[in-house]
Image 1 (cartoon, rainbow, N blue to C red):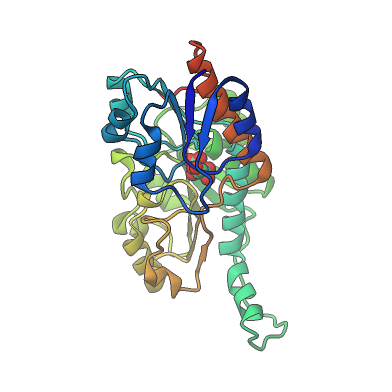
Image 2 (image 1 turned 180 degrees about the vertical axis):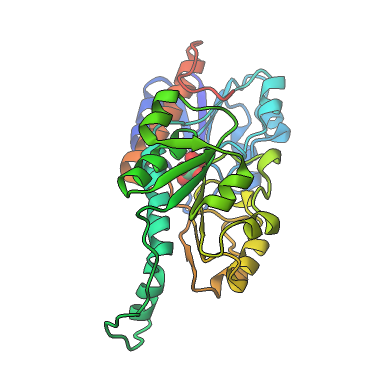
Length: 319
Ligand code: 8YV
């Protein structure tokens, strides 16, 4: 029997799976685990299930000890994990691709609709008990039909967002490190372009790339200026892909028309200028937040840990 540490609250199904074979120490606090408590608990662990709020670096791996075999992230993004440090110590790192694809694409599309149809603004008027009545020109938004969606990062979530765009009558262009399956590209009618062209032709730009040194502030003042002044930016990937201060300025000055954000540069902080602007829809990192998806993510992370502890290949290793 091995010792598995779970660094935050996850659905019971995953804990139960782990408990069949191992001793499980799961953090149950209402807040994220503190760094000190995390380091105390991981000492002697054979496996750790981590959330994106926990930084997995050399210090944590060394504190855990040489018996540590696997770090299973309950997230598809793994910018919280120093993968090279894991590799150097022979620790397998895993993530949860696939199971959150549809939920995250749903939130991307929800933000596209919130921003283009001004739903947040409308809701705030009602909740603030401001006087309003139907009017021919009241809160007019922008239609999506016949418009172009530019997808940055055409992995599973980008493709699922493209599928939704197609159903809404949009054209799709994408920028991606690699060419996607030609059958999928044909089905979506999606054309691969360089980022410059994507920014210039898109009515909505939606970010779906991973975060890392290569994508830090991929969208800054220069890229925002390259977008149409009638265009919208949506980010459901990772906050620091966008220079938030530059985005606030662009939204204030009308460089672009609006934005929808699920992720932020310094979560849970939000740039104070964004909070003052009506033309940005803000939601608190809800991309994968459905009961079904979170259960599937935690269960997949548990399966990854269990496989490595049994000496088998995990279903979804990183890299
Ligand atoms: C999760 C995410 O909510 O999977 C990711 O990369 O950003 C979200 O789906 C989060 O990571 C849960 O830890």
